[in-house]
Length: 176
Image: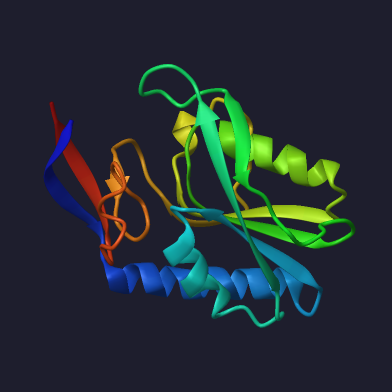
């Protein structure tokens, strides 16, 4: 499959405006509480970078990378860490920053792992929420944009490791 066309969805200005609003929501929740903000690599790196610049609680920052294994092109149900956090999470507020949540399997896995490590609280900030695709109950606490189906690329989201550098969000039309 290759990308046939990119259809503009959300421009750079709208993304930045929404990120600032999300940061204000997050700042209101955590105030001066100690917070660990965890970026889920690779897709969330641009969103994460822009978001944390607006946080006033002086968070600790860490990164995690996950891999899912299954058959074919569908996401698998077996999930593992390829890069784990280095900061202890016990008794700390933790905010996970993810690019997109659809079926919920990956975020369910990560949240269960962090709860087991004794996180004081656990919330999820997501750039794109495809709630109608949920197979597992996962709550996105801070949502950039709720979008229906479609394959989204740009602003960190990729197709076969391409299109991450695009400053806006696009729906990729694919062809065989």
